Image (tube, rainbow, N blue to C red; front, side, top):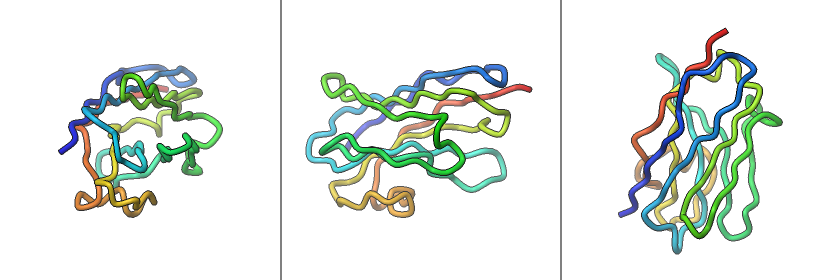
Length: 127
C-alpha cells in the first residue's frame, strides 16, 4: 500500500502560477507516477506521466508547454508546476503511482486496479 498526499492547490487569477506537490510514502519499485485532474461533470483527465527510472515525462495536449512535472527523490515527492493558468484548468488535481505493474499509460493509470491515488487538491482559476 502506498499513501499519496497532494498539496498546493489554491485559487489564482488567469495567467498565474501554482506548484502542486504529491508526497508518497514510498516509491521504491514503482515504474511511474502521474498527475490527473477532474472538473465537475467531466471525466478524469490525464495531465502527464513521469517514468521513475529515468525521469522522462509525457504530457497531455491541453497542458503541454504550460505544465511541468518534476520530482525530489530524497523526499519521495512529485511536483506539478503550472504556469499560464486558464479558467479551464479549474479542477481537483490528483496524483497516482502504479502498483508495480509497469503499466504507465494514462488509460492504465486511471484504473484503481493499476494504481494508488491521493485525495486530491483543488485548483481554481478565475478570469
